[in-house]
Structure formats: C-alpha cells, structure tokens
Amino acid sequence: MNATVQGYYGRIDYGLLPRRLVLTGQYDVWDDGLAGTADEHTLSGAVTYYMTSQVFIRAAYAYEKLNGSPRPNTGTLQLYLPF
Image 1 (cartoon, rainbow, N blue to C red):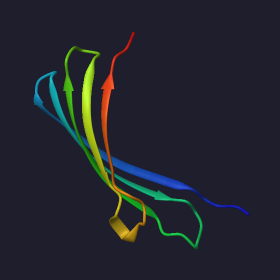
Image 2 (cartoon, one colour):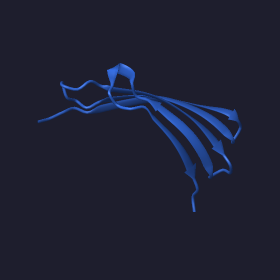
Image 3 (tube, rainbow, N blue to C red):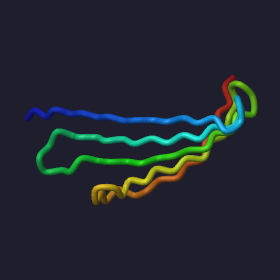
Image 4 (cartoon, rainbow, N blue to C red):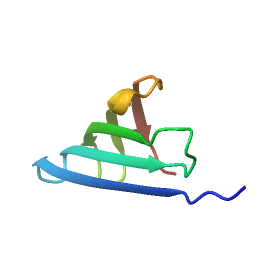
C-alpha cells in the first residue's frame, strides 16, 4: 500500500516584552494519505518567558478537536535548562 503523506503549518510569534515574553500561535494540518481517515487539524498557542537568553519556561495548549477529531486536547508546561 502506498500513501502520500502531507503536513503543513503556519506560525506567528509576537514578542510582548523584548527578549523576555513571547506569545506563539500555530495552526497545523496533517494528511496521512489514507482515504478512511480524516485530516488532522490542530490549533495551538504558547506563552514563553525567557529567564536568560537560553533558559526559558513555556506553557502551551493544543486544541485538537477541530474537524471532528477524537484526539484529546493537550496542555504542557516546559522548563528548558541547557548544560
């Protein structure tokens, strides 16, 4: 069986405070190439606070109930500490 898989997304970042606080919005479309399944559509957003230039904390939420999807919505909290 062959399937043509395609995925697209658009993203917008908006800096509320220069180099500190960033709002992000993203819209994704995923087509698994199978006739029996619907395309997946996801609308997500995040707030990222940069404590330093490389250390940040982010709260994100993905709304996946678009287009009748049975997938659950997802919220995450991320802390990035490079070393």
